[in-house]
Every structure is written in structure tokens, then in C-alpha cells.
Image (cartoon, rainbow, N blue to C red; front, side, top):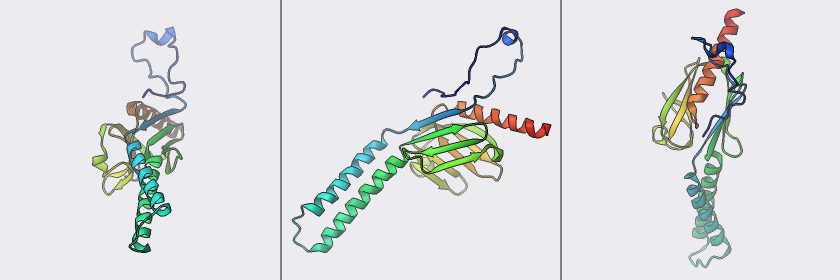
Length: 197
């Protein structure tokens, strides 16, 4: 996916076009990116099938062995179906927004869970070319001791944000290198302002 920066590029003036060591262009006012895993829709289809089976069992059941096994089968199918559907709707994609103050990470179509990380808490950001669900124990919003928090919706590139308190956030997102560049540019601006104050 392309960098969705707003205002990230502009025409280069003739006065700095030929200068060696010209400053890098300023960070865009807002950078947005996302990552999607279409394979998870297969899990959603399985969840819908479980839900439909549970409803079918409840409505049109010919079980003769008593109500307890029927109730257990219906509840099991409906619960499994709802869990699978929620998991895919909540974690089928991730959206990232970097503005002048925060890195915001939103999961799924409903945007929950949502994490907002103030840039004043960020020490650095790194590009990770290979983030896999296997490293994190699966897809979704994950936490592992010694590894930190991860929002992993597919395998591939991502970025890692390191906070001053030692915590880390790993996020799979398309064009993660651009996200790292923008976060680092914002951090340089913040440090410059702090040094000038």
C-alpha cells in the first residue's frame, strides 16, 4: 500500500535543488497507513457457519436424547460462531495515524481496541521487515512478556515503537518505513523544541 501522507511532498525550490547537504523535507502534517489480512475472512465464514448451525439446531431439532445435549450443542455452536466473527471483525485490519502529537493505532472496523501513544513518551521507532503471527502466538492484539505489545493482522513489514518506560509496540502496517521516518522526524522536532526551551 502507498504512503498516505498528506502534504509529504512538495516542489523543490531551485535555490536548494543543487545544494549538497540540503535538509530533508519536513515530516507531513499527518501520516496514515493500514494493513489488511483478507485470509481472516475465511475464519469469518467459518464463524457464520457455526452460528447458522447453532440457530438451525435450536429451531429445527429432531434430537430425542433429551434437552441437555441439544442446549449444549446450540450454545457451543453459537458461542464459537460469535467469537470467530468478533475476532475477524475486530482484527481484520489495523489503521495507524501519526500526527504531530501522537501515534494512534486502531483495530478492525469498529476501531477498538484503540491505542494512543503520545510522542513525548516515545524514545525511538524501528522498521521490522518481517513480523509474523507465529512470533506473537497468533493474529490480533497480543501481549507477550519480554516482547511487549503487538498488533499483528498479517505477516510482513511493520514498525516497533520503543517507549521511555521500556515498553514496546509492534504494528504490522503497509509502508512501515515511511511511518518510521515520520515518527523519527517528529521526535527530532520535539527534541529540538525541548533543547531550545
